[in-house]
Amino acid sequence: METHQERLDVMSDRMKALDYRMTPQRRAVLKVLAESREHPTVDQIYERVKTDFPMTSLATIYKTVTLLKEIGEVMELNFSGGRSRYDGFNPSPHPHLYCIRCERVTDPEIETFEGVSDELSAKTGYEIVGQRLDFFGVCPRCQGMARA
Image 1 (cartoon, helix red, strand yellow):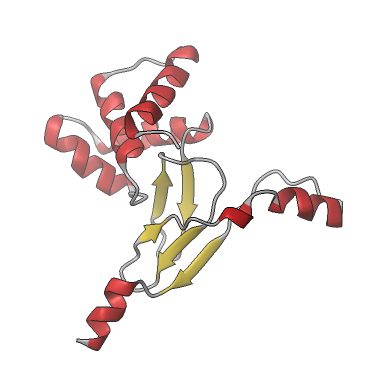
Image 2 (cartoon, rainbow, N blue to C red; image 1 turned 120 degrees about the vertical axis):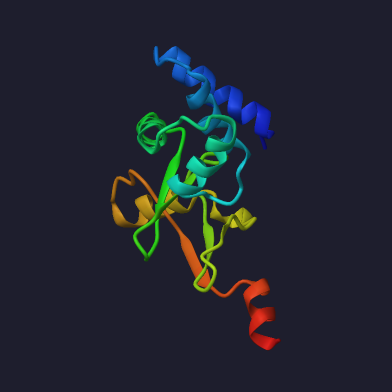
């Protein structure tokens, strides 16, 4: 698995290879996404970037995240509530755990997920172009708060 710095370098190199300008603000967005395991919203990315670049607009964040999504360097996750979450650390298809109380999103370590789309394609004849597997529940922290 890549380190946060390696992931940041991959994202940055990909943008440069496609001739996109690498402004300090864009690099800050990439850094937040590469370092985050929390699958932040655009608003959360904006708040983190604003600490170093107070003049950054929310539109800059949206445009950068949209661009990263278009070039396959960020995975968008839509959950109920209408706010998309973004996975820049691991933009390849993988399962997610979603807490229905605090809306925390985590990546479970599931080894048997590999090959599921190939198996489905072979059994159904579908040409699989994407996949997403989400599990919904109540995280241990929220369970503990309910007991208190």
